Image (cartoon, rainbow over all chains, first blue to last red):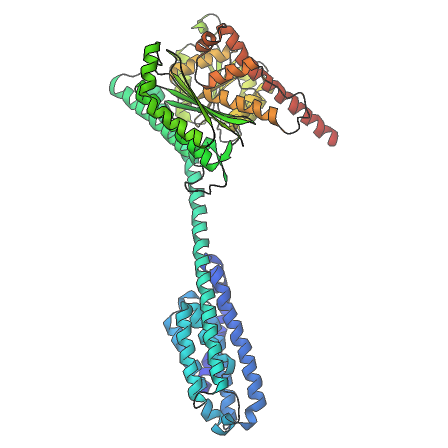
Length: 404
Length: 221
């Protein structure tokens, strides 16, 4: 066994590791992945050093009884070199692949397999510790962190077989040692999986935050440029006839649609927690456009989320009804009033309304379906609906939900 | 239009979008207004105003350097008689309400047509408030917020009369002054006065608050 050469190589690498530390550190701080995963790898490195110290103490105390004490010290030097080298190597995610994992397992198994020759069969039978002792568990932990429970288990069983071979067959302390390695592999693998999942969640949260920021930036940009130009096109073209006038009208519609889009950004996402209060204004701002004005207080109008949702849908039904019965040119106004006792939403349109009694009745029949859908939704959340139609002044639907 | 009567109405246009600024200035000039100054920045507008002496300032609420509210404060301080008609490209929000409290008497969305815009400038010059339904909704909300504010220690908080509330609600529901007058059985002028009052009370309250705040700061310092 060429322990001297190995130790020399390990020492050289340790210096290289020292010089690349700053680079590795800044990399570790960069990604969300390394933020959570890094501590596990550092913990393994610390474990290896602690185990190495234990090995050193045992060799110092027992070397006198070994068959080849000098080789035992060389083995210790090899372990020290390998400990230093793995400390450096596993810092970088790029070096945590199969080559390093297999080399780690091979070096550790090799040290352990040299035990019968170095220590001697007599001393071993006398109960002397193996060369690697606790240091043997290093690869098991490494494999578990690198690949989860299953891979950790494989490493534990391989090294367990090595341990049993060295001891010349299974006995009580050996089996206990192997069992401890297996349990460590499973526990560390499990923790690693939890860490990976937590990293995934953190990553998604970071991405969501970035997307939100991007959306806000887009909203500002659209506001500063596109909205202004569209409004200008609409304005300059409004006096022109034919196609140009049509273009101006289209620009106006797009302006209103974009404006609604960037102002609704503040609303809660669909499927948001039903227990949290929702701002009714967010549920209604989507309806605002060239033909629909939405008037509301400057402050949020908090309602239980299901109530806000149902009111929003009821308003949508009322607006649909207005355009369906009033024709394409009809305009509508939505007013949100927030009072201590109740929240009132009024939807008024400037459609034909009902010229006389007979038509009122007919219109009422025609609108029965809509009226019932509105009434149903509002009644479900404990509110009331008043529908009034003044001839020539369109239809007014008042939705009132008491604050409970 | 009444602008032909005597001296033309002096208008200043403040908007950071050059195409929009030029377009608005051209429309105003064609309609017989005197465009005495244009500016793309709030601070510059405040510096120019005393020399340009506009009757009406057409002000974009979203300016690159200072907020529209700050510009209105400075303009009103420098020219107490000036009328401010504000425009914004996005919908009615807190900044519109703040601008009204600071002293703006008119508000229009930028998407309003040229005819609506010119009419709004004329009405602003004549001292009439120019409301969108959205602004009426904001004012209603603000009065209710002031009324509901926790233990109202100050009786100076403005209140609307029932009739004023009714008028604001009808404006917010999109009715014209003429329709409101017909529905309430009052004159067009009376409706206008009610709307004017809702604005005046809030602006007065705001000035009182600012003064009180200034005195408190002065006493503390």
